[in-house]
Image 1: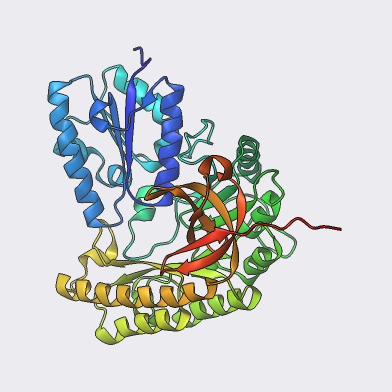
Image 2: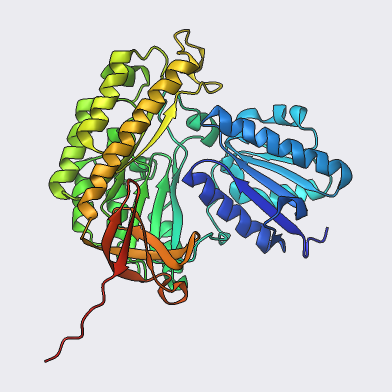
Length: 453
């Protein structure tokens, strides 16, 4: 079947891993001769890369799908694909619910998109959700940015948090080799990318499944070793990594981040709850005291580091006193940014069937109270930037003000300042901060005075 000049559209829900998967799938489609369409209704192939972390994300997918299924009755040549975590979780039952679907594929199959589509074009309806060894990335992703890029370093997750569906839908941990990761980064540096975020659902577990140990019995390949391995890749000016798990966040890793100049002083370490009993019920494997020690150690090595995290309120059985322990942790630590969510029961997870579920009213009230505190603390954390000069990597034009460009500080604060995007895109610029908000900054370029001798 000829695919020349056919148009595709991808809608992505959920996390950074999904965004990285979508970029790879877009790269495969363009290799196959498809062209990107901004409008899904003008596309011959529509792909929804789905997320099942929360119920509302899942419901949104079904409403989008309904519209395209209706369109398919008028345009039978339309190819409809559901990828990602909802696809993995629902499998064949998705076809029963939306028989117009051509392909249902779990996240582990993202790199097999061409092979699966060829089966679809041969007249088959395909479900690909069986666990497989993930095929190494061979296709060049269609990157959404020309300045910053994601690089997957480990897929899957072996943790068994009682609220989380990720291990069921993304499979067991599979690390890429340091050689493959470095080769992808060298290519990115060559193409002019300036910043790379190393990605993993549980990135601190990187290398546990790779062969080899040191004489002291340590895994030969760890995230810390990987940072040293890739730090000197030419052209890459900044390194970040996400998402971390407090159980595996070591002082050795913190020391490496402090020593390596390209690693940004920003750490995303979810704590989920500030109460030890709730953490135990969640099977998180650490206490709030241990979490606080990690943050203290980071701040000992890098006093100015930005800390962001994730938190869940309204977990089954959470009492008001336990929720207040979460508020206390947030108040004491002072996060630069916090992703918050009310607990949402997910199919196939232990906590979903517990009888001590909280009412939506209680969950919503706690979420509101937490978000209020988060905004206050983020504003306090922003104060330290006022009058300071920060290094900003320019990524784009400010969509609300074409006279301004925007980028991020090393601490991951979004920063706006006057400038011409054509001249500044991809440049590291020194910016004096003149205005602060809870989650973003405004400033002006510091003009270097020529030195006269």
